[in-house]
Structure formats: structure tokens, C-alpha cells
Amino acid sequence: MRKDTKFIHAGRDKKYTGKAVSPPVYHASTILHDSVAELNDATKNIPNNSMFYGRRGTITHFAFRDAMVELEGGYGALVYPSGLAAINAALMTFLNTGDHLLMVDTVYGPTRTLCDTVLSRMGIETTYYNPNVGAHISETIKDNTKVIFTESPGSVTMEIQDIPAISKVAHEHNIMVMIDNTYGNLVNFEPYAHGVDLSVQAATKYIVGHSDAMLGTITCTEKYWKKLFHQSYAMGYTAGPDDIDRAMRGIRTLKTRIKQHEESALKIARWLKKHELVDLVLHPAFADCPGHEIWKRDFNGSNGLFSFTLKEGHNEAMTAMMDSFKLFKMGYSWGGFESLAMSFYDLKKERDLNLWDNYGPLVRLHVGLEDADDLITDLEQGLTHYKNAL
Ligand SMILES: *Cc1c(COP(=O)(O)O)cnc(C)c1O
Image 1 (cartoon, helix red, strand yellow):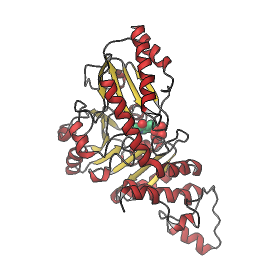
Image 2 (cartoon, protein in one colour):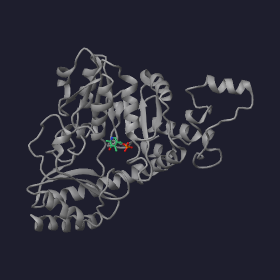
Image 3 (cartoon, rainbow, N blue to C red):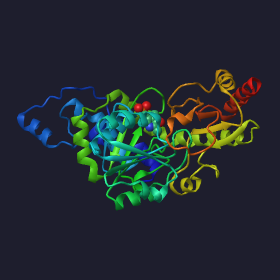
Image 4 (cartoon, rainbow, N blue to C red):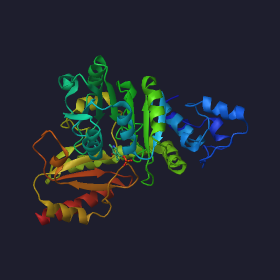
């Protein structure tokens, strides 16, 4: 089966769907067992897909988890109440007090906060490494390094990491490699073809795709599956069936949506690149984006997310532009059908390493499914407001 077909059929086993096209949304805490034998059987089957108690998951969860493994790979999949909860579960499961974590410096901001507060309080030390490090990651490894956490492209600044090179070095040192694969969704990057051991996603973004649910997922290889499963259950992680249903529905159109997001974002990025006020367009499909060659080698295309910087400016000009946008709405998150713009004026605060000189005015766009020319018109009038406020 080709991947496009899998998106339509994943998780739709008859044992879940019955006569319907999609699995039912099963609301349950208590699961009733008809006999002691059946109860014992359900207990024995953990972590297999039999209903035992709501927190263990219902048919809705099992179908979605199967779909995640079919589409992302790995051996098993679990759901979490948010992407950040999934990141927390992954790190908490595989790190102990006294361990060392290598975290990419361009990581999603709240993941950094998690490391610098909760993990640090528990005696887990974090070192932030350069996203462009590749095989030189070996120079930052310590005797007690247990996990290398990657995120590619980097948050906001879009650097592409050499995941195969990092994984090779990590495995030579018996270190586990995790990725925040939210950008990669289930279309753009295949973590298990590039040496990753565990992949986290904020399904909140492209998988749900409609900005109306919070959901995290983890898939991992067989080596790590049992530990992840039992520890996640011990920590009480689950997610509601309605949110999972939204993710399952999102999967059916994911490939089609990503294609359109990609096409429109590229059109807009090329237009921005020619604009007199624009300095850099940070899009991995462009040759000047750090790691562009690796992106060409490892990724199946791009999507609607990228950033650009402006040549000169100040907060007032940025505010004038942001307030003038009509189609690009202001708000955190991305991956929905709608276009979003966020401005970042002081990215330096969120980084340990001084990787580049240009920390000037930066805008991150999520290009939605509106007509790309309408979005260009909106950007054009926004940039005029910017210029007039300079
Ligand atoms: C949004 C996001 C998260 C967190 O997901 P939530 O569901 O909002 O908790 C993690 N990583 C990346 C890259 C994200 O964009």
C-alpha cells in the first residue's frame, strides 16, 4: 500500500469500526466485564488492545494508536493530553536523577522551560547544543548522557538537523535519540528511517488540523515500548475520546492539506524573498537555510510553517504591521486550516548559544488554506503599514 492510501485506511480495522466507516467515539471510564475469566483475560492482555479501564484506553484510543504506528512507524503508540505532556512523559520515562540530557538549542520554548525547571529540580542536567552540530555531537557527550533530544527544523529559526549523523553517534554510545516531530507531522519526515528511537508529536497541530483540540502522541521502537507504556500509565496519562476522534478525522485529509499548505507557503515565501523590506526568509526549501541540503536528503517536502526577518525596524513598526493584518490572525499554535502570524522581537532570551547575528524583527507565519494571492495581498498591506511606521 502506498502512503497516500494508508492515510485513508489506517486504524480502520473492522474490530474497531464494526459496520461503520470510522471507529466509534467510545466514552467510558468503567468497562464492564461479564465474568471473572473475561476480567482476568483483559488484565493479561495489557498492553494489548483490550478494554480494561477507561484510562487504559477504549476502541477510539486503540484505533488511533494503531493508525499512528501505521503512519509514523515504530512499534507502539500512546496518547497524551497535549504535545508538551508527551514531551514530559518521554523525558520523565527515560531520564533519572544524575543523568545528562543533550537538548537542541533551537527547541520549542516550553520544552526548554520544562528542562530548566522540572527536570533541573529533579537533578537532571541539560546541555543545549547547536542544531547544526551533526556528528560533532560526540564532543558534547558525557559519561552520564542518556538522551539526545532533537527537533528539526528548529523552532522559529528553522535550522535542519542531521538526524542520521546524530543517531549514529548516539547509538555508538548507547544513548537514546528522541525527536519532536511536530513539524514532520506524518507526511514530511519519517523518524524511524533516520535512526530515531522515539518520536513525539503535538497532534494539536497538523494532525488535528482544525485548531480545536489539544493532543500529544508518542511512538517508539520495540526496545523502548514496554517501559514507555508502563511508566505513562503509572503517571496517569490519557486523552479524551472526542479529541482523539478529531485527530483521527484529521489524518484522513492530512496528506492533501499538507500539499496545499506547502504550495501556498512556497509561493508566499518566494514573494517575500523579493520584497524590499525583507532580509531573510527562513524556509528549509531555500538554499540559504541552514541544513537545506540535509532537508533535501531527509524530508518529504515542507508545509505551511516558516519565518522571515525584516531589514530594519522596531517594535512600533512591528505592532503597526501585526495590527493591520486581516487574514493572518495573531495567536499561538499552528497547523490548522487558518493563517497565523506571530512576531518575535527578542528571540535571544530563548537561546543559550549565540548562533546568528540577526536577532532583529522576525515574523513567523503559518500559511493556511486560504487563497495564496489573498494572503500575499494581506502581507503587502501589512508591510506597507510597517514601512510607514519606520
Ligand atoms: C505546539 C508544539 C508543542 C506543544 O504541543 P501542545 O499540544 O501545544 O502542548 C511541542 N512541540 C512543538 C514543535 C510545537 O509546535
